[in-house]
Image 1 (cartoon, helix red, strand yellow):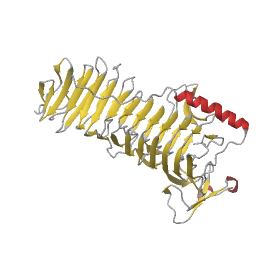
Image 2 (cartoon, rainbow, N blue to C red):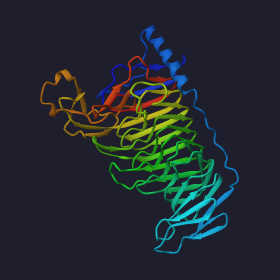
Image 3 (cartoon, one colour):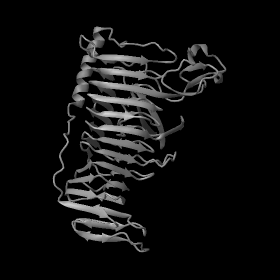
Image 4 (cartoon, rainbow, N blue to C red):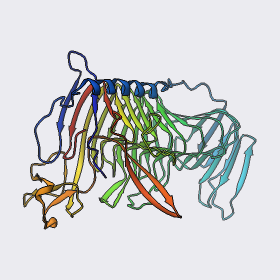
Amino acid sequence: MKKIKNIFIALIVSVIFSCSFVLSACGNNNNTNTNDAMLESTEETTKTTQSATNVKNAISSITTDETEVFNNAQYTIIYADGVLSVNGEDMDTDSESETYGQVIINENVIATKTTSKKGNVTITILKGGNWEFRANSGYTGNIDINADGDINLLFDTQIITGQTSINSEYIYTAHLFYSGETTLSYSGKKVIDNGSSNAIILTILDGANVSVNNNSGAHTSDNKNAISSDSGIVINGTGVLNINSEKTAIKADGIVKILGTTINILNAGYYTSESDQEGHGIKGESINLLNANIIISGAGKDGLHAELTDEDSTAFTYNNGFVYAEGTTLTIAGVNGDGVYGDSFVYIVSGTYNITTTTHMITATSSSSSYFTRSSSASTTFSGISSNYSKKASDEIRSNYSSYYSLATSTKGIKVGEIDYDVTTNDVTTAVKANVSEHNYLIYIVGGTFTINTFDDAI
C-alpha cells in the first residue's frame, strides 16, 4: 500500500495539553515524540479550521440512540426438553424422524424441522411486536425474522447453537435484546446476519455478558463474519459483548455505531502471510464510537476499518469512510494490519487509545518502499518496535535487494487516505488504489491520551 507523504494532522488542544502522544514511528527510531505534528503557517491553520468545520458537519447527524428498556413480551417462544412452545402451542422436536418439513404452529410463527435429528428447528417469526425467546437448557436451531412490523426480541440467559437472521425482504426494524449470561455460537457460519436494508439494533442490557463465537479454526477465504449486516449496525447498552470470529467480528455495509457498550474481540480472522490474511476487528462504511470500551486482542488485518462501499466512491468524501470516536477507551493489540484505518478521515474528540500492531518482515525486492537490515537473531514477526532492525535509505540500495527486508503489510497506528476501487475499460477491470487529496486534513484530534507502539508509522 502506498504511503501518503502529505498528511496534515490537526491537533486542537487547550492551554493545558489534553492530548499526549507516546509514539514509536518508522524503523528503529525508538525516541518518544510528543505532540510533534504542529501547523507551520497561517495558510495551513486556515485550511485546518475549514476542514475541522467540514468534519464536524459530517458527523453532526450522529445520534446517541439511547438504550430502550424491553417491555413485557406479547409473544413467548419456549424450548425445553425437546418441546417448542409458542404462546402455549407445542411442537415436539425431540423425536427422530427421517421425514421433516414445514410445520405451521400458529399464525405468528412457522417452525421448520431442518433435519431428522432431535431439535434442529428453524423458527420464522411472522408477527411484529415484543417477543421473548427462552431456552435455558440449550437450543440448536435458527431464528429467522420476516415479520409484518417492527420487532423487539429478547434473549434472556440462553445457550443457542444456530443463526439469528433478518430476512432480506424485511422492511422494518429488528431490535435484539440480550440479558444475563448468553452464549450464541454457529461454527463456520454467521451468528447474527442482517439481510435487511434497515440497520439492526443490538442492545446488551446492563449486567449482561454475551458471547458470540463462530470460529471453526479454518483459514480460508470462505470464512464468515460473526456479526454481519447488509446495512448498518447499532450496538448499545452497558453490558459486555465478547466475540471470537473466524473472520471480521463485526461487519456492516453501512455505519457501525457503538454506544456505551463494552466489546471484547478475542479474535477476528487470521494471518498466515501477506497474501493470506482475513478479518478486521470492526469494519463498516463508517465507524462511530461514543463512550464505548473496545478491546481487540487479535485480527488478521486492521483493528478498526472504515471503507467506502459505494462503487461510485473514487475520491475523498466527508460523508462516509471515516472513524469517529468520543469518550471511548480503545485497546488494540495483536492486529496484523493498521490499528485504526479510515478511507477519508479519522476524528477523535476524547478518550484513551492504546494501540500495538504486529509487524511481519519479508525479503525486499526492487519495488519495496523501504529497506531494513536486521541482526542475525531477529524474528521476522514481532509486536511494537524492534531494535533488531535498522532502516536504510532507499538511494543507498543499488543492488542485491534480497539481502534486505521490508514490511509485509501496513501496520500503522492510525492511518487514513487510500481508497480502493475498480475501473473497467473495454471489459477489462483494473483495481486502483487512490490517495486522497493532500488538500484535505484527514486526521483531526481534539483531545485524548494516545499510546501507540508500532514499528511502522504511529500516525
